[in-house]
Length: 279
Image (tube, rainbow, N blue to C red; front, top):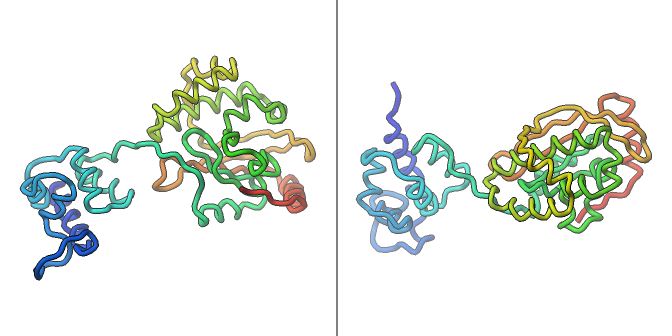
């Protein structure tokens, strides 16, 4: 037997409400029959009518608006996964994504990158700024730790760095693909407005970028193969896979792995012989 959506929403709201400590929000006064905040206190924090909130918990009144759900999520101090679940049971779709600039990653996520000993791995945000990387990425792709944070942008490097351009088997095909994937990533992360200034800067920097951007191609990064011409190791055939970071639509991880065991061993020796740089 299925549970009506309104009842699921009401049960979820009641559960979250009863988990909150009234004293932590400055609510006091008298003995409470049940734990957590009262309905009118949640309504006060969410700036909505107590009657309307009561109806929501009782499964009445129809579907709430996205604005109401956002205010309730803030009032109940929901985490991002909890807020997404609230929207899924309340409206049947996740909340609209708003881009939030990222300066770094958690130590746990950095340890995931570091676990790839012979596979260059990076984490980028929606504007394709590299915010984290491992030793193999610094050795084989770009030593991001030696660059100022403002210059750790994949697109800027592809279109303005002669060394990176020379390292590509087919630079034009790679660059066109990357521009299309960047367009898709920025839209998915809700960064459509933020990319306007960036695209203007890139278009002024590179006529080739401008031409590719105006083509309006869209690509999914997904997975594939890449032939890299390294200045010391020579030609390396690499497989790559792209992953989203759960709960962070603004972040994506790209991991490369050598196709042959011989290349893997050469990379392991080369990476091990180089000092680590990170900032």
